[in-house]
Length: 123
Length: 123
Image (cartoon, rainbow over all chains, first blue to last red):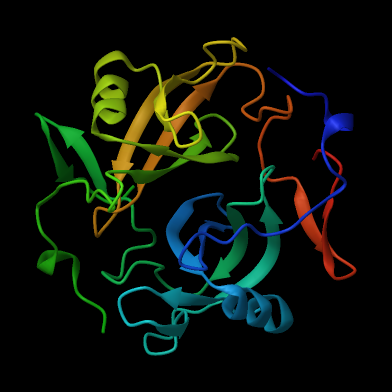
């Protein structure tokens, strides 16, 4: 069933999952490349919107994680969006250096080839 | 700590979460717009790769969900990618009509304005 735009609420709130987190898609504001997916809790989102320096929640380290704090590959927030049902964020950012911990521009470098996911050359 | 590309594994496997799901970022292959985020289980991914018709797992209905089955707004797979740690998929698709259930091109139409997330006009 498709609703018309007029039927959608005027405002929306982030819908945190059972761990208090929301997935965040991060896109390069200049090139349109999807750089990575990470997670935020309420504090990470609040600090990101306040400072325009992107801060995630590290699920492995269980702590706030200012992107690029050690690598210098920071993300400056250009625009933030929340989706139609409030359970995903999209950030358009200015990315310094590579977004991926491997040094690549983005994290999505495995493609299905011959029945497995193989590394592909950087575009 | 940044690794060099040579230190990353040659192949990767999807890392399913505790519900057997993986988040999927879907991007318009022609415009680069991020259209939506949804979820797949192993069957959805297998059928999507086999048929090139994008099929998700509906967490609310708890069933496989062929995108556009009722609306006609189908997604034809152009390219699939898995990320560096295997826990996110990126699909580049050819999108028929709007990707959002509201009829909009994409789902990300709330932006932070005056301390709340407000609907913004379609770009």
